Length: 365
Image (cartoon, rainbow, N blue to C red; front, side, top):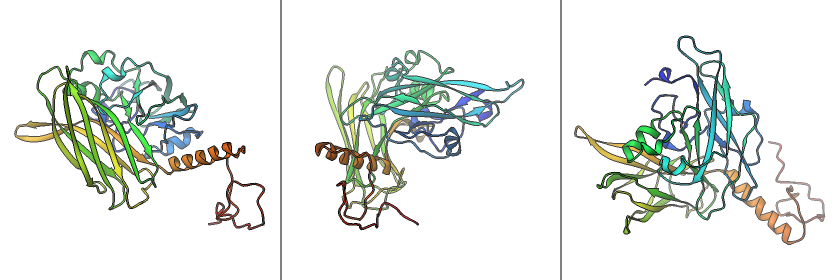
């Protein structure tokens, strides 16, 4: 359906490369409109002007809280359309899973909500004050965010019994938006993410799933990836599969087709290897995406069921280095939140000897 057939309201996206359409796939889980920004305070105009960009920062469990902003685009159309529309957006957080079944997130209490208001069709609006979110401490896992609105249907868990229901009631619901991202240092030798994979099914037969490693904006060569998954089906029948370590290239996916048994429950880990110590571009990404494979009138097609994304961001590296120096200073009995070098070799020792006066941290270019 065209965007004009959407009900009047304000809508959040689940992927950057999408228009507002009825049927926009909420299971893409790469929302640019759910925006964690660590310690950054942002004017709403900046969020509006960056509508065509993914600008989120890492959610750091070591922070006391993380501000999360919301933005959306208005639909105000039709006969007797109102002077303005308002939509209340609520955010839930769950421990990350690859397939976002409503059974996983629907009973989780929202940690906050904000109301967005717009007065004309196509207007982009953003929250002035963020929601405060406290991340959970978990080794190898992260938080996934689910945005619902006052127009999102209730009791979806009662309707969703298999992957087709998941697509129908969650994936094709424009009032839902999902954010399933973790961040990595762009100069690190490797990155990984571990996630839970559940295949709910009210039928005894398994499902043919396609697991795809999908890189965007990574270095042209020298990067490799693999994934492995181990779990079981009730009552306890072990099942495992994986993709051996292979080279990956920008915008060129690596796929593995697996017949996954009904009601499988396991853990999947995606590993990225950067043995040549290359630097990833800011906001480049590597995703693990899962599709259901089906044959319709003799043609094979893939239906998106879920995704999880590793995003490379220099902000992650800066925060890690600052924290490392903070820990050193605490051990030494000193405390400097921030410092400039006075030369290439100067560190956090004060007072400094000599007068080099050629700081590499201040540039006139």
